[in-house]
Image (cartoon, rainbow, N blue to C red):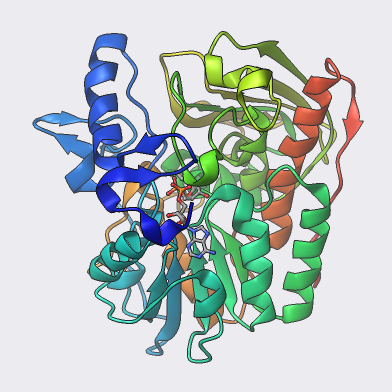
Length: 420
Ligand SMILES: NC(=O)c1ccc[n+]([C@@H]2O[C@H](COP(=O)([O-])OP(=O)(O)OC[C@H]3O[C@@H](n4cnc5c(N)ncnc54)[C@H](O)[C@@H]3O)[C@@H](O)[C@H]2O)c1
């Protein structure tokens, strides 16, 4: 179906399934009250996320994130940005580009004209393009934020880099395809442009603290770490071309893997992963395009330090949800707080934000991810979640899924390093 033939109130994301975004958000609010399940995985859009007095889980403000450092401008320059993608999660407008003092949003795009118009309104931007492919031809645009469907991220990022743009992209960096990872790595390296994946866990308050303590040696070598991304999807979420229907859990591994790779900037070298055939219909192999039989996949990774990580992704078990993790090292552990040998801890307060920039959803990570990306361009340095970290976070999950399909066979994982 041609995208410009659908209206916003009746978005058709596959040939046969009409889908209404507003009623999706409302229906999970209602359905979940009864089932004890309310989780969208989407952003903190306040208008859509609050129904009466009920706040939909995943949209709630993180009550712990009350403090941050003062923000200091690194430049008075404005980076000219293009924004692409205003789908189920309305992510194009969720990361505060429109409020950042070092950003001018030049143009926006979504394949659906009505979404494109809504994105333009949310970004206070009058110029629109019918597709990413058209937007990146605009020579005035220096950087793009890509919030399109996950299977398109690698293709879209490579196209934008080839047109000389810096790239920020929603997770994951690559989707189910290891060759795309090598292609993306080469495209970033040869472009000389900045590339950052917006891994939301990397600016959670706890993960930020873990990283700062790790850098000063407060954990020593990490012996064991564990991360989870739990997001109950009893019904398929109708995203663009149905990419979330039957999604292999470890194709979406970055939120859990962040609790090792986002702490150390290391990698996983090998994996044994197991799954259990799902009782959820869309997660049964005959009902999805991936022929995926699993709704939960539990990976045991060997880390580049020689330690172990247990990383879980689950779509088919209701209850506790979100992006979480803990770590244990030779000199200390972090289970909600640091306990260990180091007595002089570094400043663990997260970076501050420009006056009009809200820290946003997913544990107050949205505004900080944008500020980090824009600062990396202005300061001509690698961003926190650079291409090697983005690929180490993403590729390990693809191999984990392969392992699960082979009943836990131990498989090697390709390694990525940032060049100096
Ligand atoms: N915590 C997190 O980090 C988190 C949470 C939610 C979603 N996400 C990610 O955010 C992204 C967006 O999620 P979503 O649920 O809104 O996706 P979606 O599939 O609902 O929407 C994707 C949108 O991209 C648009 N698009 C696709 N190709 C395009 C092109 N060539 N040009 C212009 N527009 C194009 C589509 O028209 C669609 O509106 C996904 O990659 C998802 O993985 C991350």
